[in-house]
Structures are given as structure tokens and as C-alpha cells.
Length: 395
Ligand code: PLP
Image 1 (spheres, protein in one colour):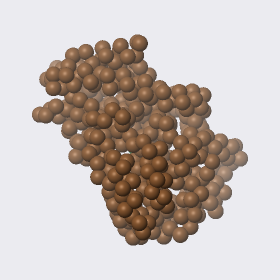
Image 2: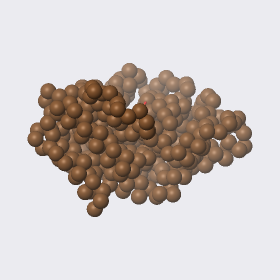
Image 3: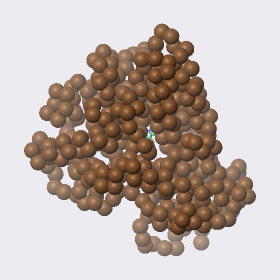
Image 4: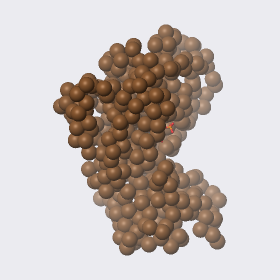
């Protein structure tokens, strides 16, 4: 029997990927309905309720624009609606996703100044502050932060970044990617005076991939009026001229039924409880990995406990062992889906997603499959990782 061949052909796949994530049954049921005209008054009620609900989840009273497209669409819409060719942005390096967002900006003719950071330790907020303080001519148009770096399992404290921007008196817009933090980590758009918030449907919002959005402040709407980057499908001014005040083309109607149900589930639980739940499950995963780290085993990629992500944990393999082998065994032998290492971390880390619709038993199932996969692949590790997670969940 090979390390990747299943002995059991029944049961569900355990999905511990950091996105897309598990979809609750009631969201699946909500989407599973006959199609409807997107101008139909019955649909407009669902549409308006979903918009209002998403704004509550974002913590904003201001504007929201939605797109048919994954997170990349919202990245692009946010940049093109707010910037002009030759503008400069300040981008905090966090990992693969900050790099990709920066590449996208550069492809649009935006100059990207990066605040460099060690991917395992995280960016120093004082370095962001220093870069803004140095910019006495206020050339920087926007500060861009990936709230939760899905590739490394590390978050950036947004309130501290806000304070750093305020301390310098710099007028730059504050743009944040919440794709793997919204509805998982504490997030408050208006309280933290964030001007543009990029989000997507397929992670903490527990819906299928395909809808993304930008929350937009009044300050950003004013900046939009003079922004000259080319855009059409994503143009906010054009959207405001449509009946629905968003979407240029056909509205993805069924996705709205799912999103409305997801918002209902999140609000029924209470956003504080949603954040606490993510912390609780994440802590179980970290306790497990910290035991595996014994005996020169796999360890937490993030070395800065103040920045641990509560939505995803990246696990660094010991030298000479490939993370893809662990993923192949977990998937092939135990039907557990893990995230892979992105960009330069490919083969070096695997990622355990613990955001969205999952519970202790599902997390333990995934951890157990990983521990067995370590054994089957001869990867050294400390014994008792799953036991440590069980202790945490049984405390
Ligand atoms: N930003 C972050 C933090 C992400 O995790 C992802 C995808 O995982 C993206 C952006 C890109 O989003 P998408 O893959 O939905 O286009």
C-alpha cells in the first residue's frame, strides 16, 4: 500500500484549505434555487439585504461595490478606481499575496514602494511610519496592507498602521486586503478609518468563489473622481449609474442568496463570537504543530506569536523533506485537503486552513491525517501533537 493510496473509499473529504473553504449546508440550500431576473423586485430585496449585511460585516456606513470575480477582481477594481498612471503606493511586504498585489499595481503603471519584511517575522509598523514620514512631498497616494497573509499565516495589526499613518499626518489612502481575514479576524473599516477594503466570498464568508467587493470611504470616493487608470467593467461611477448601484454586467443572482444566508449565520453567532471561534480553533492547531516541532520536526512558519493568524497556519517542513509529499499523502490516503506553499514557499510549507465552517472534530481529523502522513513519509517530529490539540479542545 503506497503512502498516497486510500484504503477507504467512503466518507467526505475533510477540507482544511485556507480558501475556498467549507460551505455550510444552509448556504448550499440557499443557492440551490431557480434562477431569477436580477431586476425582479423579489431579487432586489435579497440584493439590498445582502448589501446591507455585508456593510455591517465590514463595519462601514459608507460605500460598497461588488464584482463577479474572485479576489483579484477586487484588487484590480480598487487600484484602478483610486489611482492614476505614475502614482506611487506604499506596500507592506507580507508574503506571496502582497507581492502579487504589488505586481498588479506595477502592471497598471503604478510605482510600488515596498516596505521590506522578513516573511517569518512580519513587517515592522515603525518602518511603514518612517517611509511615510520621509515622504514630505506626499507623493505616496495609498498605503496598501494585506491584513492576513494567507501564504505565511501571519496578520498585520491594522489599528497600529492607522495610528502610524495618523502620527505622520500623511494624507495617503489606507487600502486593506481582507480576503482571508474578513469574518475570521477582528476587522472594523470605519473605526480604523480604512479607505478601501478588498474582500471575497470564499473564505470567512463561507460561500462559493466568484463574488468580491470593495468597501469605500468618502475620502476614497473623492479620490476616485480624479483617478485616471483605465477601467470599464470595474468603474464605480458607471456602477452608480446602474439600477443596482454596483455591477456592470449580469448580477450573479444565486450567489446573493448564499451570501445573504452566510451573513445571517454570522450575525446569529455574533461577530465577536466568530472572531473568538477562529482564535480557539487556531490555537488548537498551533499547540499541535508546536509539539511536532520537537525532534527537529515541522514548525510554525510564523515566528512572531504576536502576529499568529487565526485563519490559517503555515507549517515549515524540516530541511530535506518536501511539504508536497505530506499534502499528497493527506489527500490520497486520508482524503484531507491541505493548502500548499505559494511562490518561493512551494514545497517548503503546507498550510492548514482553519477558517469558516468547521469545528474541533474537523480540525482534529485534519491534524490526525497530517500526523499520520508525517509518519508514513518518515518525517521526524515530536510525538503527541494531536494529543496537545485534544487537551486544548477538552479544557
Ligand atoms: N489576497 C489574499 C490575502 C488571498 O488569500 C487571496 C487568495 O487566496 C487573494 C488575495 C487572491 O484572491 P483570489 O484567489 O480570490 O483571486
